[in-house]
Image (tube, rainbow, N blue to C red; front, side):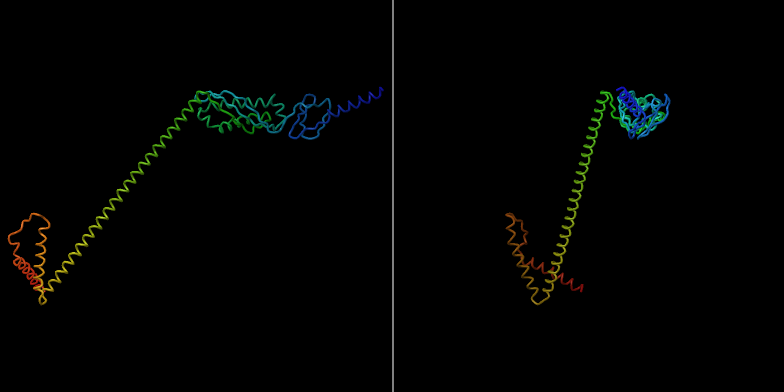
Length: 311
């Protein structure tokens, strides 16, 4: 019975020794080993062996990218406006030895440095610029923290501002300013539209008046050309008729026929005088048809004589 107990004790002791000797490190992990309280080695992922009772795992680090929240903090801008800023810092341990012995808590050190850097960067900017320059602030904080974190074995991959919150009074003032600016732009756009409408209307009326004037001008020109053509045609017809009458007067019996036609026309005109008005003023010799016909014939003869002399 006692031998069995001794065997069990030996097995348990061997198991404990093997358990403290064999170390299996997961992927993307780094374990820092100290031997007798002094740094000895870093165990890589996989199967590793250490000396029991002499070596111990002092630090275990995750080598993957780690997001760390940066708590909200009050920052004062260049124009003395207080705002609350928080963000997210993305870190990765690149040197496990520096991370173990460079700082007692590298992650806390990085977060504190990110907060102080953000306060410093906000203090260089006015409120409006700070609100619109997130990318600039992100780059500045990430660069400053990354430079200092090299001694801690930490790589700062990026920093992202999550929220910038000005005081409630500033937010209300900004909303009023934005509303006033939008109303201003709306009024300007409306006035520009009305101005363009008036310009278009006046241009249309001007063009309409020009078209009407051109139409009237063309109509007057066409009317004048028509009247001139009509007068010319009437004159040519009258001249042709007179020429035909003159030629007919030289024919045998033509002169007597001309006398008869003149007498006939005179009588017709005399008969029509009373139709145009109830009151007439007639010359004393208007009834002497023979004298009037003789006068007309003498004028015809004079014209014929002039035509003959010209020939």
